[in-house]
Image 1: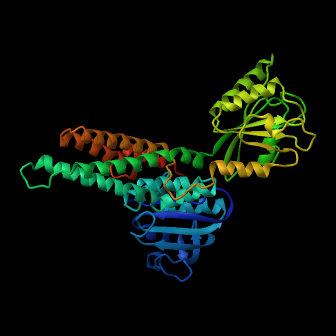
Image 2 (image 1 turned 45 degrees about the vertical axis):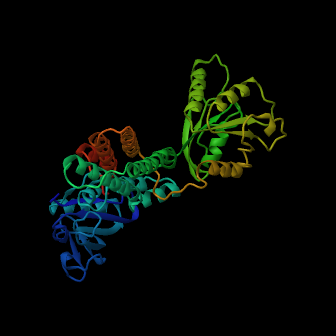
Length: 453
C-alpha cells in the first residue's frame, strides 16, 4: 500500500460541493503538482487538518476551480496514512479534470472501498466497523443510520472483544494444564468455567437473535397488498408512495403482475408489493398473476389485506383472507371509508383492522402508527443489532462451538477436547472483527463499497 490512491468521493452528479480524496505516503507532494495555495505555501507545510484556499489546475496547467485543500498527517487519519482532500465546486467536469490531473501527477485510481480497506489494514478500524461504513452510506431510515453509526464507532466490537478475551482466559488455563502437567498450576474450578461458558452462550444467543430485527432494519419490511380485484390495492400503493406509481382503473384485473415500490412509512422502509386481485379466472396471464400474488403473501414479512368496505364480502374476499391469515404479521384494511359501509372490523378475523380511504388518505395515520408499533417502537439502535449474513454466520458457529465446549466440560472430557471447541469459538469471533480473517473474506466485504470510500 505504498502507492498513492485518488478518487472522487462525492459521486458523479452535479452538486454544490465535490470532493477529491487522496491517500498514501507522498500525497501532499503529488497534490502540490495540481494545486497552488493563495499564500504560496506548499501543501506539505500547511497546518494539520486546516482548510486552505487555492487554485486547482488541470493537466494543461489551466485554472479549473478555486477550491479548498486540507492536508491530514498520518497516523491520525481515516486511512492511517497521509491524506489530502480538495473541496471543489460540485461540477462533474471540474472533478473529472482534477482527478485526471492527479493521475498525471503519479496517483492511481482507488478501487471500491480501498480507503476503508487501508483503514482496516492500518489498524484504524476492525471489520465490524468497516462493514458498518457501507451500511451507514446505504441507510434508508434514521434507525438504520443510528445502528450503523454506533457500529462505526465500535459498539459491536465492544460486545465481541470481552467475549473473546474470556475465551482467551479459558483457553490459556486449559493450555497451561495440557502443556505443563508438572507445574503448580491452580486446579480447575469446574463451576467457574461452566459459569463463564453459560454467560458467553447467553450473549452469543442474544446477538444471533438480533439478526431478524437487523434484516428488517437494513432491508425494510416486505409488505404484500392482498385482496380481490378492484378493492383499491393499487390506489393504496399510490397513496403511500405519494404519486401515481400504478395504473388505477375501474376495470377488474388491471394489475396482472406484482408491482414493487419502496416507501418510508411507519418509521421503516416498506417494500410494498401490489398484487393481482385474488380470484378464479380463465385468463392465463391473469391466473399467473394471481399465483404470484399468493406466493408474495407467503414470502412477505407483512400482509395488508384490503377489502371494499362499501360492498359485502364475497367468496373472492374469503379466499384472499385465507391467504392473508397464513402470514405471521397481517393487518386488515377496510377501504373506501368515504362511502357507506357494508363491512366492519368484527367481520374480519384479523387482530388489527383499520378503516381507510386510499382516495383521501383517511386512516393512513393510524396505519402508520400501527406499523411503527410492530416494527420500530422500542427498537434499540445502539449498534448491537447484527445486519449482515457474514456476521450472523460467524456468531452462529461461535455459539455452536461454545455450546460444544460446555457440553464437553459437563461430560468430564479431557482438557484438550474442551480446548479444541474453545479455540474454534475464538476463531469464529475473530472472523467478525478481523483478528483471524482470510483474504477472500476481506475482498468480498470491500467489493460492496463505492469508489471514493
